[in-house]
Length: 224
Image (cartoon, rainbow, N blue to C red):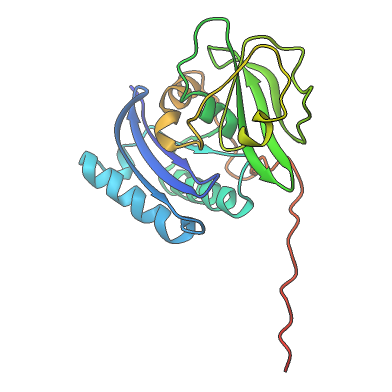
């Protein structure tokens, strides 16, 4: 049996879910930019209280580890590491775009193309099979009208898909209205499979999968 706490802080969503053997028990979500640092631990507390369980009863902690918000990813991974270190539990890290893809019920043979807005005219993208096997790895790039022409029966979704829908010339692509963002509730089966296969991460060396370098902006100086 696996009892896994899942965390997703990769976007403006801050979400926590608890799964038993891949099945959702309970979840909490706050959708507010910059809410991760103040909301995450409170959501964890709410989820565990709703389930009537203690953190010590967990089998593992799973976290959506990128790409996504630099600050959000750091907060999510640091929190997951802290719980795992304190309670001697294994850490599971899942690709954010695979988490988003797991929210879609795809027909056999279809290829899933989750797209997350990466700003500055870029998107984070990956291609998965209908069974969530990786076909093309996560990457950050600028889409052109001819992008992904080598793939057939693509299903595109996520909050980055609108950037491409009007200009896309792919002859066999379907754009879905949702899901737009990943959530912890979608992580259950992926985390359970990783637990069964003991795909655990090193608590010391594991870092978020940013995919591209951080580009901050300098604060404006106020005149005296």
